[in-house]
Length: 194
Image (cartoon, rainbow, N blue to C red; front, side, top):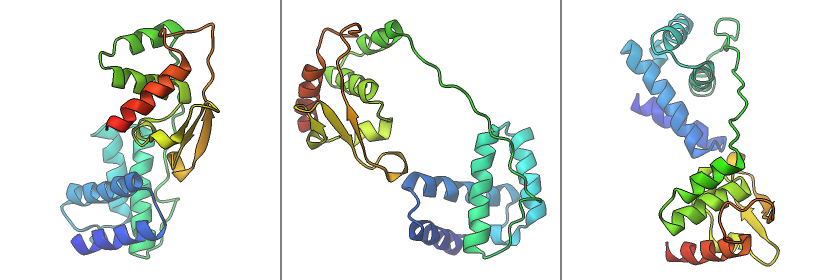
C-alpha cells in the first residue's frame, strides 16, 4: 500500500488538490483497503459495491460522506491504477442539502460574550463580521487587515480563492460595546503577539 499511497499522493499533488482533500482521499482508500484486509489494487467493482452498502448500513454514514468516500476511490482507480470506473456500477447517492442554522442577534451576542479571552473574543467577532471560515481566520495576518478602508483580505480561502470582505458597522446591532475599528485594532495588536 505504501507505493500505491505515494503514487496517489503524487497524482493529487500534480492536480493541485488541497491538503485537506488529499488527506481525506488517502484516508478513504486506506479505509477501503483495511475493511477488506487486502491491497486496494486487488479489489474491484463488486468490492466497491459491498463497501458502499456497508458505509450506509453498518457505519450509518450520511450520503455526503459516502460521496466523498466514493470520490476518493474513483480518483484512485482512474488516476492511479488507470482503470475504468463505471458510474452505472457505483451510483453516487443523492446529496443531502440542508439550510444552515442561523443564529439570532441575541444568540450571537451571548456566544461572543461567553468567551473569556480577549484574543478569542476578537477572533470570534472577526469571523462573524467577515464570514471567514475557521481555517481562513486562523491564517489571518496583520497585513490582511486594512483599517482605513475597513476591509479584510482573506487569502487562499476555500478553493484556494482570495476575497476581500468589507467590514461595516451596523449601529442597530452591537453584540459588544467595541466598535468595528477597535475590534480590528485589537485583532491587529493581538495577531502581532502570536
